Structure formats: C-alpha cells, structure tokens
Image (cartoon, rainbow, N blue to C red; front, side, top):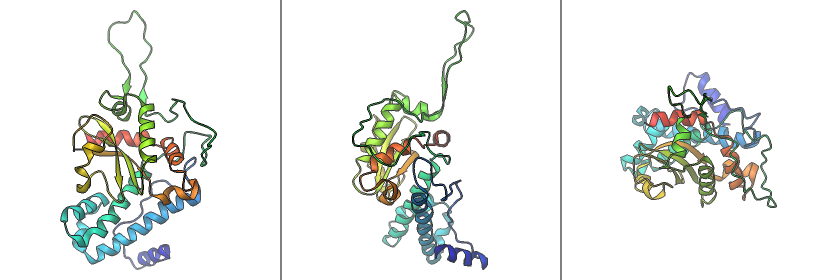
Length: 280
C-alpha cells in the first residue's frame, strides 16, 4: 500500500520531502552473512519507508520544519525546541537517522566471513583473537638494513588509528569484543556506537530513538564512553541498530550477540575512515 501511494504521488508530480535513499542494497539479495532477503526487506526497506512516510505526514502539518532537510538536523531541531508536540517527530526522525546511518556503515557486498551463519552454536565458544574484518591500514614497506636515509613506518587509516591509540582500545580485537559485549548486553531497543572526538574514541549506547548528538544524551556521554575520555563533544562514526525487528527474522529472540558478531564482519571501514576525517 505504501509503494502504491508513493507511485500515485509521483504520477501527480508530488515529491515527498524525505525518501528512502538508494544505498546499493537489494532486497532480493539481502546482505550476505548478515541478513536474509526477508530480513533486509523488513529492517531497511519496510521500516525506513514507514518512518519516512510518517515524518512526511507530520511535516505537511508543520511546513516550517521543512527547512531542516536532513534527518539529524530535523531530529535536533525537535529536541531543542522543547515543544512537547514535536516529541513524536523527534522520535521518528531519530529512528530514521539511526537506521540509515547503520545501513550506510555496511559493506553492500556482505560479510568478509564466508562461513557466517545466523545461528549461534551453543557448543562452540569462540576464544580466538583473530579479527576477520580489520580496519584498513598500510603496512610499512620492507627496506634494506643499510638504508638509513629516512624512517619508514606504517601509515594507519583513520579508523585503525582511532581504535588502536593509547587513549582508546589499543587493539582491534579488544575493540571488537567491547563493541559486541556492549551491544549484546543492552536491555530494550536502541543502538551501540563508536564515537570519535578530538581527543579519543569510545563506545556509547543510546536507547529508544536517541542519537549520540541528541541533547538529552549529551550529559550521559562522558559516563557511558568506554575509554578515558570525559569530553562531551563526540561525533558518531559507526552505529549498529539493535531494535529487535532488525534481527528477529533471521536470528530469533536470543540472537542479538550473533547478530553483533556478524555485523562486525560487514563493517565498511572506508566509510568509517571518511566519517572520522569529517569529525576532525
């Protein structure tokens, strides 16, 4: 019904203000190693369409808010207004931003783990420190021992540098386990984030429709970030949506941790690199 409604609006020359963007995903294929075709259809196409339709309906009644043409700006405007009448729109825009941010963080070609499954094997406990999906970095080239004309070192990309710094997690394996543990232990709907600041990087949980940049969460950032930081100036660079409908179809009610593990193997580190650079 929603698709038919959109086609009718387009035939009449009417453009809905917010539309589901084309981010390279195909519901017929799902996301290999993360979501089945049915799971992706629910988590991205159906859910995002529903949210944006409701946002557009609200904006038709409050046209002055159309000047905020991206979801995060709209969300923050609703939060900062203090108007209780905008709480529903704040909720919808926060959810839509978080979901889009999550799916844009993923490799459209799917998991680097060719053996990924949706089911947890209770008989197997993974104690390996191996990280299949490493952030990008450039190894130091081999040079002759007699060549002392210059000093050559590895050139990390932004995500690798941010994660492995002395002020953050020091190793990618520690970061991976921290991110998975933090997400898997959440009670209720929300998202788990890697946030970056001018000083360090850390992990942050938000609940319900909250975003890392929502005013209502800013006072909690320092206490939630898993790192030595006490700064309130943070920028989200990776977000994993943990609303139950995202993973229930493929993973079941007890599958949150397995979903988190598979998510890590689907992170597009080039996107995270770009976001960290933008945050500087």
